[in-house]
Amino acid sequence: MKSRKIRRAKLKRFPYDVLFEVKADRVRLLPPVTVFWAFLYQVLNPDMACQEVVSRLRCWRLSQHLGKATKADPPSLGTSGYCQSRQALGLNLVVSAFETVRSYLERRAASAWLWCGRRVKVLDGTSFSMPDTAANQKRWPQHSSQKKGCGFPTAKMLGLFCLSTGAWLGHSLGRWCRHDLSLLAGLKSLLVKDDILLGDAGFCSYALMAELKQERGVDTVFRLHQARSKDMRRGRKLGKDDRLQTWTKPVQRPRRSSWKKQAWNKLPQELHIRVVRVVMDKKGFRTRRLWVATTLTDAVVYPAEKLAELYFRRWSIELFYRDIKTTLRMEVLRTKTPAMIEKELHMHALAYNCIRALILESASQHQQELGRISFKGAVDLLRQWLPQAAACYEQPRKLARCQADLLEAIASVQNPLRPGRKEPRAVKRRPKSYQLLTRPRHKFQEIPHRERYRAAA
Image 1 (cartoon, rainbow, N blue to C red):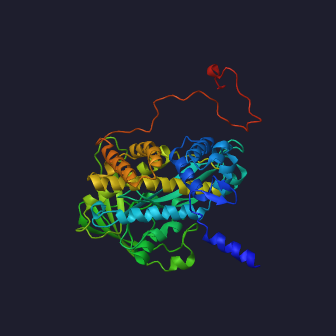
Image 2 (cartoon, helix red, strand yellow):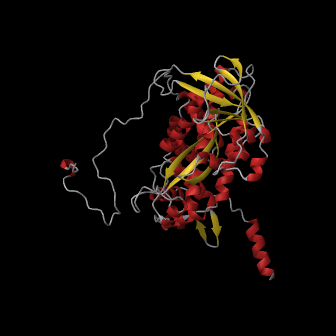
Image 3 (cartoon, rainbow, N blue to C red):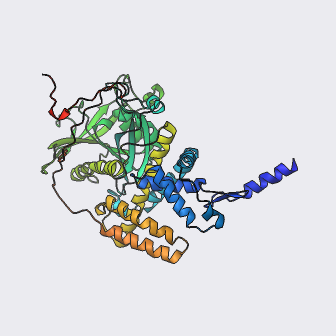
């Protein structure tokens, strides 16, 4: 009994957050800290397979000169140990790291990047697919119109971002068929008093606008829902194409409402909503005229022109998703279980916020416009800088100089100003004429000479 207590005391005093874990006569190659950084490095390099990660860990391990035994008996190149260690990595560790970087971004947001002195948070939904495994299909089933064995599990994600810094604040997951509004319940805790929530017409709900205004002191700016009347003769006139209207609470709670009966009964019976009609004459945009509904009823503090400019900036979240899904390749995740999918998703969020933190620090030090710095350029520079940083991690002064050079380089890589540039959603390069997999692989028969094949009329 006494020896067991002594053994436990020794284990508690052991520094498990060191780079290597020593147990008895062996050295562990894959402790949690090493696996965490290797996983993050893999997310920053989307084309890197697990085999390449293990090879890099092997080279790094041999370069540490930890003794002759290490050189004589190099680590194995098998990927099983890394994959098992990655599965054993706690989700709480990844979430804690994500929340730490998110808090840093929120603290570093300067008042110059606020809108009318207030912080704006923008939200929108997106989707991503994953490997076709039984566990993933059970959690996030594929589209109902696809045949079994021919599709991929698809998850719906509602993301909340900071409009000024681009920080990924949080997300909520659901099946592909769920509406964006039904996923918002998990993100309401991230909205604090005096925030402004910006979104498209799918969020223009009386219940949401009334709840956020009454209970949390959060104002909303949404595009007017298509079911709402666009008659600008209603309400009190505040200016040209600017009306203050009174919306009444629906008599009955909607059948598929996200609000329970008790929360629905607490909503006020009336809500003052300001409706602004915006005419957009910019070349290349699909919509020429739109209506914006907001709870910002003060026309002096929040003029109609500023509201129109703010809603125009809502498109920034589409650029955020492009950085995440195209640059960091989050459009298709690679892990095969729901637990690993959530872990990989948080790793992508952490990697994205780390890049945003570098961009924010670079813009602050070198007095550059935050929105002009290229996200893709920052990712490319970081990928080239990391090996040099690893080589001088024991030399603090040299590492600080490398970091200063990185921030200066990031500030110099800026996107050109292209006002009114048209970006059609079209692909110039033609894809190869492969058949569509309309049956499971073991039943599928490939058509010979498909280049000359024509389906029967």
